[in-house]
Image 1 (tube, rainbow, N blue to C red):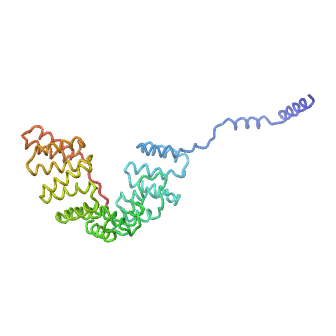
Image 2: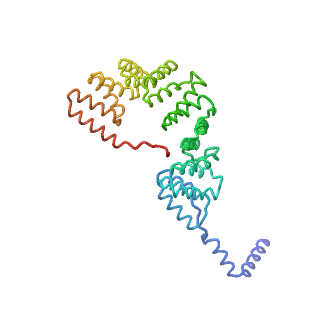
Image 3: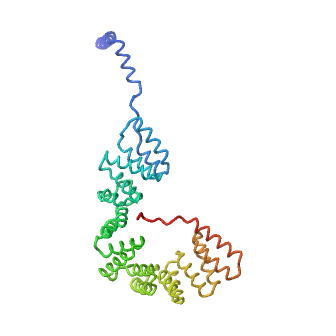
Length: 352
């Protein structure tokens, strides 16, 4: 009891001698909100960009930067949002600033390399992308792929081959690396180099699957149908259960006017790839060539059921209906084909 009274007396004296203003300040400091601006939630802003709300993300970044300049990560997100909006020039400025603030910001480097590529500045993108050795956690486009495309556009074909190989984990000078690079070169219409690489792949591994098919595709692109047929037949002999080669053989035979061989190859393609529309469309085309619109219509109607948005199917189906005297249906199919072809997005080309 004596100790309790003594403690109470000491506390009472302390309250009496403490200055009232000090006590008031202490109470105020414990209750008043901080005058410092609250930190922006960068992860939430990133989610806005990923959800397609780039404008709202930019607004939040502007507000945060007005309150507290040079917040780490803001310029990277600003560049990403501007990229999503298609404003590549401003995106490049923001991403360059982000890299000035942090030269090790891998995601900013990836986006800046991609931005420069989209701005048709592959030579400027290359040194940035060459410094990236691993994906950032939020990466959506493989930097090795973008780097390879930059090499293609600057005619550095061997470097492109190495970059493509790195993307797939191939040895850079292997047959698979040459074949992969050859396919990409064909896609971008670099035919002489594509053929050189495809032949090198065959030289390194004569039994490499799809290497002969690539040579056949290159021959078709050169309008050398006989060579294409020869290469596709070699691929069929190497890879007899690959359905895609029978589709390509059927196309080549059709172009060569060998309709019976085309029918046989395309029916084999249907057996091996029953869910692919390509063989059905080609079968319809061959039947039209052979003046058999009934059979053509049957195959083309099957293709239309599988993929109603292929304009070629509707165009050929219109021809079959017209040959059968079904003029109203023929006009409808021709109109649908025209609408689908007009609505098709333009073919994306890499900057040259």
